[in-house]
Image (tube, rainbow, N blue to C red):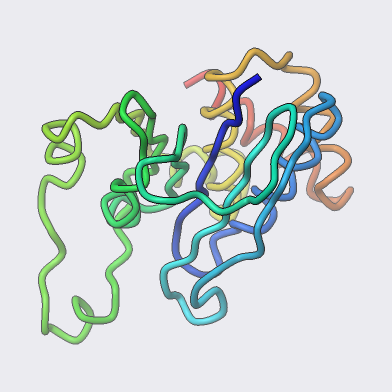
Length: 190
């Protein structure tokens, strides 16, 4: 089996670490060799954050170079644009439509780019965009955006739904399992 690369990108504090841990647990349980990187970026300061997950028969490094990602899971649409060059031809971006203004926009030295997702489509990126924040809030917490997006990503894999739920149950703290199951379902069925 070829190696598959997934980049999880977002803004610090959005749950990249939990998302990558859940994916790692799921894929390991499916018998794949899995490598997961540490979170890179300003995870404590609201800055850009990226985590890599690679899996296959044999994986030597979790790092994904330009043009190598099969999937990019983006918690914010500007982050999808920032990391789009890493997507391979035919790859897919699963993204939240939420806008989180970076510091230059907050301070007034820059403007948030308009029509980001349209521009990415025009560049040939396959975009799967959804309002994951609203679905997470419907599930019970805005912090569940990461799980909503993983629910949406799950539809791209030939891994049974129940395996995703089992990975969720073994990864998430017990008091948050039901809310996260609902978030996953909302992403999966939207």
